Every structure is written in C-alpha cells, then in structure tokens.
Amino acid sequence: MISFNKLWITMKSKGVSTYTLRERCGIDSKTVRRLRANENVETKTLDKLCSALDCKIEDIVEFVKE
Image (cartoon, rainbow, N blue to C red):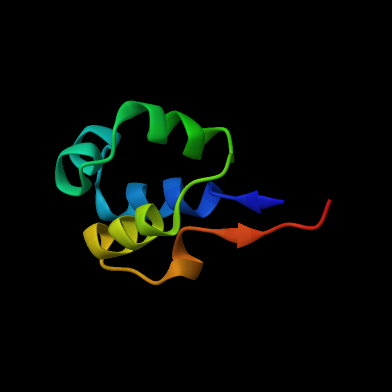
C-alpha cells in the first residue's frame, strides 16, 4: 500500500497547511482528500508536492507492505 503519512509530517515540519499547499500547487480539495485517504494520485501531483515543499519523493510517500 502507498502511504502519504510522511506528507503530513513534512508539511508540519515546514509549517505548510493544506490551504497553503492548495494555493501553492494548484491542488484541489478533492486531491487533498485522496491524499488523506491514501488513494491514487497522479505523478504530476507528486511532482507539484515535491516542488512546493522543496523535498524528495521519499519525504512524502512510502510503500507499506500489507
């Protein structure tokens, strides 16, 4: 399973809210809901997140064996 738990930790450590993320990345609230539910998102969304947070992909996502 792909988990976005690291995203919320990275956001908190950088002082970035979901509102700021939506404004900075152009990510809509529906996508934020999908991230919270660990559902599928497009790779371009991951690219936007890494750019906005100035981080690596492993700072926002991880694979967790079920």
